[in-house]
Amino acid sequence: QVQFVESGGGLVQSGGSLRLSCTASGSGFSIYRMGWYRQAPGKKRELVADITRGGNTNYADSVKGRFTISRDNAKNTVYLQMNSLKPEDTAVYYCNARSPYGDAVYDWGQGTQVTVSS
Image 1 (cartoon, helix red, strand yellow):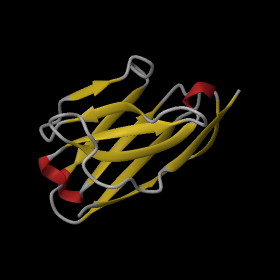
Image 2 (cartoon, rainbow, N blue to C red):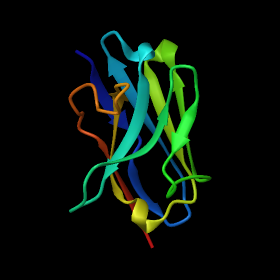
Image 3 (tube, rainbow, N blue to C red):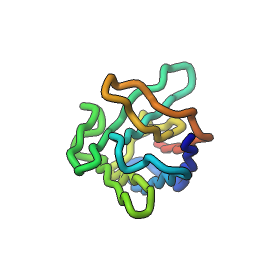
Image 4 (cartoon, rainbow, N blue to C red):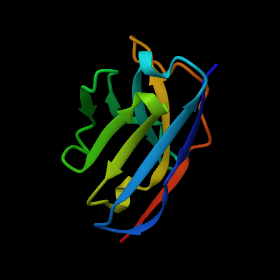
């Protein structure tokens, strides 16, 4: 079993930046596509960005050009650089491994809160 610890969230003004980190314990991190997800109050959890073990990336349309996902397999860590933040980016952000079918592989961590003020 792999566990995730997300960090780096906080309160930031609109237009600001944050860098989130997610570190995985246990083995198996490097073999999976990794994803950053977010869940806003009253909404379903959604995929924000993902990255293959080789570094190919995909982004939700709402964050393209503003967010960048990266990973360091040696450190079992995936990052999300978030620039030009908007109030609608406010959510709890989570990471998880993605199966070939797109499902989350492991249990969810605690997440990290991102709040963007207008």
